[in-house]
Image (cartoon, rainbow, N blue to C red; front, side, top):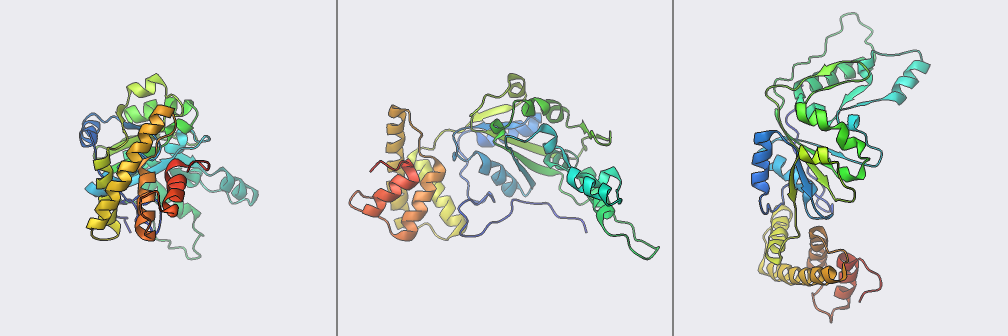
Length: 319
């Protein structure tokens, strides 16, 4: 069977991070940035502090438009080819030791950029590789695996998350694939060409823990996500309640406003002291905790002082 477009997957109601894109408040020029990125074919590089909504924006764009969603979270060990394809060296070694080697394509798995730039090709390859890995049938009349992928969604969003964690060679290694949308599989020498109907929005995030190469920055559209203003934080709280829990009541509104003012004060204090500022994600943690546990945002509430320290300040010695 041909798979349907893959949207961001829903998560459990009690999951702290819900990357399905439903509850997101688009701020500033982000909508225009998406239009420009799609018009130019350039990746959209989102800069900003952790917890500012960079990663969840990609899922939101996919959910809002009904496009296929792919993501790859970068680590210090990630290399550029990992975003294009992966090769299962362990399985091939095991098959070699068992004297049951399969065609080399069987050990190649399409990566997120291959799936976005050439979705039909990636799907057909995955079907062939799976057929090679399946046990051989005893009967002679084996039915061939269909490789038709005409119903695949050609519109997609790719999230490359926290690229600043990787060695600088990773962004340099992506210059050609991101620019030409073609690459060569090193194990087989096969050239992967972009498909004419494939429209992929590539969203890359960085926490700016490491500078990115100038050549890479020149090939991206860059947007800086600033911390939301108090009014915007209230709308973020509203979006999350309405998306996952139900109506946003007057009590929710009062709580969100009180917390937004506290977060704003803490950010101003952090600015003066050159400390880390509370993020939007941490505001949401405090909001949900106060809402569900009945904690009052006032200094006379000992639980509030403890929550403020744990969720917003992240400092054990601050009252």
